Amino acid sequence: MEEEKKKSRVLIIGATGRLGNYLTRFSIESGHPTFALIRNSTSSAKLKSLSDAGVTLLKGSLEDEGSLEEAVSKVDVVISAIPSKHVLDQKLLIKVIKQAGSIKRFIPAEYGANPDKTQISDLDHGFYSKKCEIKRMIESEGIPYTYICCGLFMRILLPSLVQPGLQSPPIDKVTVYGDGNVKAVFVNDVDVAAFTIKTIDDPRTLNKTLYLRPPENICSMNDLVELWEGKIEKKLEKTFVTENQLLKTIKETPYPDNMEMVFIYSVFIKRDHTYFDIESSGGVNGTELYPDVKYMTVSEFLDTLL
Image 1 (cartoon, rainbow, N blue to C red):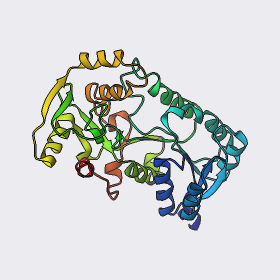
Image 2: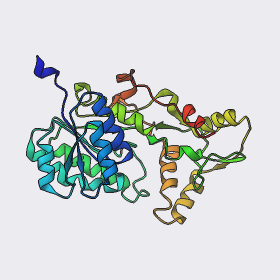
Image 3: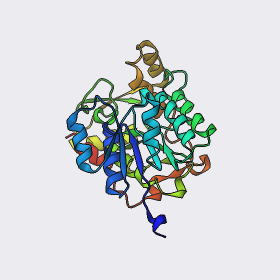
């Protein structure tokens, strides 16, 4: 009985990043023995912060097979929180996890939209296809997994009210993409971490995709504009951009400067966050599964921008 109550030992890769830092915090708070794979170049301040929090530091990198083997041998669960541009760097890690044969669950650097559900493969310069490649590798190797799909982090697009090029929300005029009625999902980084740690020892999420769709955070552009107008007590002048106009701008803007608009096209034109039903797609709804997790709402986030 005592053995059954033991919390899984967790290795977090990317622990010094924003999401990774939150993951280590919630892992420790939840009672999991927590390890972090740390590069030699990591600053002493970051090392001290993790160590003081109770994290066991392991020197190594995703390019060093020996360090990966040693780190993986110490844990039951591996969570990757590396940046999306480095997603293919997880290949050696997957090989090591497969060879170890002892990992109960791998949570790769997925997050964001479900790459298998996006409809912009001709525009995203491989952004989502690389994530799909990692998923297929995990599945073909028979590695137990949980994928986390949270929509957009609130810090992406929302601080400008989905206005490319702006650093803060508009106070006079606003551009609305499409008809403004397509819904997108926004979740704060810290809340994504809280939900992710909840899945670690939960059999209901094993070999499943966990979707985060907080009801208050499923918003269209028209919803966002209305919320913001209420907060600044002022009506904004709307300019509507059609799908064809947005596509023209994307194609005329060089990569990677056009990626913000590519995400807008994916989310607010193609409905890549919400066009499918969670259950029928074989996923589980994290906000229903873990009602005890308190999350920031879009309205609360907009309050921080005032």
